[in-house]
Length: 263
Image 1 (cartoon, rainbow, N blue to C red):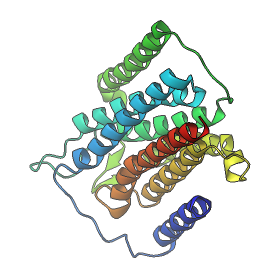
Image 2: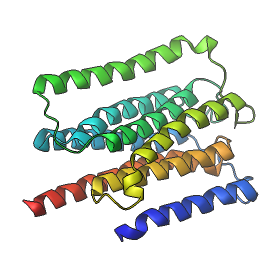
Image 3: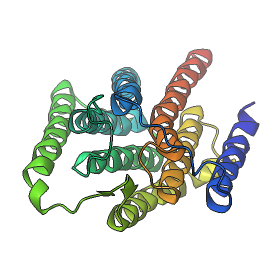
């Protein structure tokens, strides 16, 4: 099952992108759903908090480098997802286009996920001992960074270019910025996980990080190919983030089982 998981994700993702690129099959369908952002982002926020907690707990018990890196970044991703909910609640009275600041937080939450996976995959094997005081200040630093982003973006809103044009299509700037920045971060994560892709690393946690990165990449790429709010690709992009974190949760559980079996 482990051997087919990666090719299966690649096959499904590639088929999804081909359908969006070369057929009008999914293009006509748009479903403005009230509270769509909270419905899709709340599972992402909860999953990011769960992954962050388990990663930091794993590091506390085993001084694991990858867990120490991924945990704080997941806290940051959760804060950015929460900011997306607060800036785009999609109330029933205004379920249409909002060309405000919400898409910035959407793309930033994806960026945090890619960066977290890349840094964790790039972390060298071995233990990383951190004192309670050091863990506390790391947590404070990432919390401050998330709050800083959440405060700065609304403050500079008047000078930010709109990311959405009517009737709900992403602006060319949004497509270019979201694609280039997140694409580079995703490429960096996959490059860091090339040993997993080549089958030379047996760590189940690393495998799940690569799988999650691919799921996120296919979800976001589909939305950039068909960049309409409330389109099928928009919902898939929103759903891909918690699914990827769910895969990482499975990786954490498998790594724990492997450690228990070895001890």
